Image (cartoon, rainbow, N blue to C red):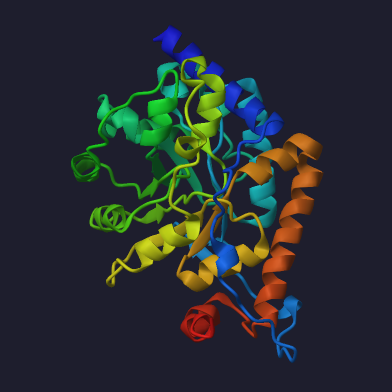
Length: 348
């Protein structure tokens, strides 16, 4: 167990360093939102200051429909980043996730690297485990342990088969997602969020995940952080993989449209992520039907560049852009956006 925990921690440090120092985005594949044209009004009747972006997530109030996705933990570097993210999320009152807690389940000495509730007592907070671990024997015990470890409001289960295939230490296993979630829900009361890691999802995937009746699904489309590329940098045994394979995925826009088309009155929250790193793309995602947007890499890089101040500057600009776009579309809040979204999109 100690060897496994050490390996997991080392991998987490590798991930942070690679994201900070290397190009880890997709090449030749965008998030797809540039294909959606929304028209600014020359005669707006709403000012950015009047735009209200408040909503709820996991039964908690948030000021903006934004979630900082789980990134790290399990190392001292991860602890520093998690605590910085928690401060920012608490300041802006937005949702937050931590990285995979597998390392802390394997080694209790690493638990503190994930704990942020003392810093962000009121934010919606998601624990995190991988479907690959459930395929190898994790169950209700580990799910509850991850929740209790950080006083989380929900458990995010990340689904990353392509990353696992390329990863040096990966588990190339069938997800067996339907059986896993159905069995887990029998004795696990906390909300479950199913999330990809950046390769997107097909209409068939979307229908399968929606039928599991979880709290939320994070589509994690292609066009943002490319975990295939990150693992390619780490695994010297796969140094001849093709660029087409490494940049394989379904764009965020297409993934979002795939799941929205399958909703059929399902009461599941939709989180859009995958390169939604600008306020205008965030509004486009909401117009397409997402309830929230989620981002990670620009937050990590802002903290790495200039700490809390730089991250605050980035998020403030992101939100300013969202509010400005809303104002120029004559939308004063998220309820109005939902009512008018078809009218706006029909103009395309």
